[in-house]
Length: 294
Image (tube, rainbow, N blue to C red):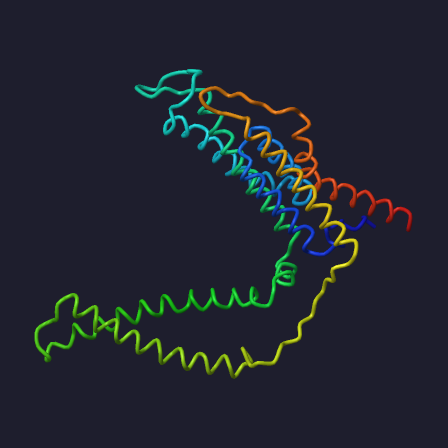
């Protein structure tokens, strides 16, 4: 029998991977630095290969890499800044610094997309719903109702305007302002009547009945999860401090200069490698356990 596939962060609380991925994505978006972006892209690509597989990652890179190249090539056309002239396109000058900034932003976009894809493979919808509070769980209901009511309101507006336009016995057609006022008044009355009926229907189904609803929590925050959250938070603070120190000295324009000491990049490299390290370590332990059991 083949060994069971290890699910990364499957044995810990959902708050642990959610905090980790949120911190990595936030630092990746805020630290616009070639080294930090390269580390983030490498970590996201390695984790995507480990958790999603080479085929799924390649299918995503089919459209992500052209996007990176597009951003890299378009940036010199909109921002002709720098000191290292590469070539000219008519009256436009293409500088190395503009290409480097465009490549950095394109790689940043690809890295963020890869991180979100990897996080979606780890954090299923039920884990995210269990992680959210009671008020946040009502957000899908509010969104679906809005998506349903907006087209309904627009359709009723067209019906009201066409009905008023067909009633020619009352005299000439009113002016546009008067027509909009009459249509808005009819829609407001219509919506208020529907809101009362919808509120009664939802109250009959137990919404906001005043009795707190019980809910099943499939995950419980344990001591090891609290320790992991504290470690991730400390690592995020250290990464943010190092990123601020490194980015404050770095300049793209007019010349690329101001690289920080190499040890300032180590905390973020550890943070970006932490998901794939967890995946590889867990898979190795699972294989060894399955082999020992046989």
